[in-house]
Structures are given as structure tokens and as C-alpha cells.
Image (cartoon, rainbow, N blue to C red):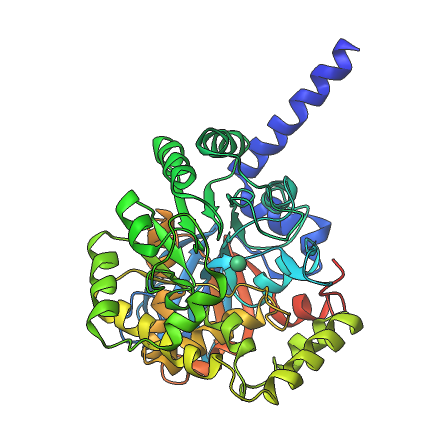
Length: 479
Ligand SMILES: [Zn+2]
């Protein structure tokens, strides 16, 4: 019995060191990954490609990017970069190369039923995210306990295909949310213990949720920060101002969830409907909102844009792209298209006013020097489908008033900066990891070209985007 135990306990350590030493080979070389791999040569040259480096700098045509064992070794004019003998050369005339997307409000679950249960999409979503060019994703909340941590391990070890995951622990929430999968904290001590428990098991991010109370949030922040970990919030019972003063690192969704403008708001209580009414009456250019923006920027609180999910609530907005609809389980497709049609026919929806206000708030925050992050939040009533939604988010940031180059920076380097990984990922530069997406066209002038993904490189291994998308047809909503 003892020897069995010791073999078992050695196994994970061996797998982990394999993942650490040869993660690209482990990821690209497994049978699970191999079916999607188009290139895993040790040295690869991407030639005659337009480089959009993710820093916001203008794009540069006719470049060569030299990748050696998963690392970018050279970037420069195709006439000048020396290509070593034995290199696999890919002529990418007519294509652009961008950093892999670093997306900050992703989920591994999808609304599959009547509101109170979210199905984990551990099969379809990792493939979809990678297909869309997402090479790093922070899960913006977790409904499934250990599942996201185990999924991250499976991806790192090559047993599953998907982006590098920054795993958020199960939600930190107070009582009152009608979702069975979310624990209701019983006070500050419980909040501290929950952070400690999940941090010990590998969670690297935390998310406070709508009904959390100030003492619980303060306690969670203290424990997370003591461990060098960050906390974001989709808040309601605590205002943005209160959370910023406590030192929260990030706020999700933006103005439309801020309870700061609800008159006579009771402390520690979420005035659910009151928030929408208070925001609908607000002038984003007015002094109170602009003062809040200045305060968030001054306190270095990052803001995650999730325009994709709000678009689904807004009348007059298009259906999800056909690929996303085809990705859904038939029942999920029906649920989504019926609700979308009902919203289209809805007169007097508050979202007709809220959606443009949210766009202006994010633009103003960005122009004021705030760290804006991009996420997609595949929740609501459906229609926000991993991979497809990440492209849509960048398109919506451009609709909000960012230039395409700025939107791309928000979706790449800004996320890397927030995660503290900008030295390794988030832009195209010598020495960084070859996490890249190749698209037809030029999204630096026409952001919609971001949807035309051909190949996604993760750690220097190239995956076929179309094949990844095709592999999960009809499964979103099921698993
Ligand atoms: Zn979310």
C-alpha cells in the first residue's frame, strides 16, 4: 500500500516538471493537441507579414518574425532578418500577426437552463477561446469549484487544448444570490478562509460579487494582497468608491453596475433595480461620473470592459455570428434566438440608453489614463460564445471610440500588464513567448479583420483555428 501511495504522489510532480520544462512540446505533442497542430517545428519564420505588436504602435508591413523553441528571437524587415538553415518558413503575404489575446473576463460556463444552474463548458470553451486567438484568459469567476483548476492543469500538461488560464476562485459573495453554485459568505472570517483555501490550491485571482459586504471584501483583499494576489469585483452592495478606497485592484463591467449613484443607498445592500434607474438618469460627461473616473484612475483600479454581454440585452443589436450560433446545442440556440427576438421587439428597454453610456464611460476612463481591460463574460441569456465573442469585444471597443490599435492593445498588452506578465506575453517583442494570432487582412485599420483568424500560436506551436472551431460544433451549452 505504501509503495502504491508513493508512486501516486510522484506522478503529479513528474507531470508538473514535464509541463514546466517542455510545456510547448507537452501541449503540442499530445494526441489531443496534435489533431489541431499545423506547425510545431523548433524554428519557424513568419515572413512578409504585417506586425501589429500590441503596444499601440503603428503596424509595420513586410516583416519577419523568427520563433525558436517557443520564444520570439527576431522581428524585422523581411529583407534583413537572417533565417537559419532548417527553419520552417511560412510566407504570410496578405496576413497580419498580432499578440495572442489576453482576455480578462472569461468563463468556462454558459447559461444552459433556467437561470440558477450554469453548465461547465470544459470541452468546448477552451478550444473556442484558442480558436479565436486567446492565448491567455483570466476566468472572471468560477461556478464549478475545482473544475477550472483541473482544466488549467490539463491544458498545461497537453491533455486538453486551450489558452493559459489564470484561474479565479469560486465567487466571494454575501447572501441573497439565487444561484446554488455560489457560496454565501457568513462574514469577514469566512471571506479570509475562502481566499486562503483557494489560493493554497492554485487560484491566482479572486472575484468579489454583487452581495458581498464591506467587512468581507476588506478581509478578502487583505488575505489576497498578503499573498501577492489580485481581487476584482462585480459589485453592487459595495460601491465603486468604497471598493477603490479599500484597495480593490479591478472592477468588472463598468458604469452600468455601479451603485454609487443610487440615492440613499443603504450600506452593504444591493439595490438591484435601483442601479439601472440611477444610471439611466446619469450624464456620463457630468461632474459626478467624471469625478469617479478620476478617482479610479488615481487609485490605479483597472476596469474590465464586457460590452459583449451588454450588447445582448440591447434592442437593435445584431445576432451572434453564424459560427457562434452553429456552435450551440440546438436547445441553447433556441433559447438564445427566441430571447434575442423578444429583446429586438421590446419598447422602452433601459439598455437603449445604458449601452451607449457604458461605451462612453469606458472611452473616458481610457482617455483619462485608466488601465482598461477586455473581457467578454459569456453569461446573460447566451449568445456570448467564447472565441467569437473575443473578436466582438474588440469591435465594440472601436465602436465606443478607441482606434483599432488602441482596442488591440486593450485586448493584449493591457491584460498582460494587469496580470504582471508583460515581460513574457502581451506584445510582439524579442524574448517574449510566441503567443501569436495570424489573421487575413489588416485589423489595425479594419478591426473586423480580427475575425479572420487562420493560425494561433501558443508557446510557438501553431494551431488551426478553423479546425478548432469546427471540432465543437453543436456542443456549447452541453459541455
Ligand atoms: Zn462574469
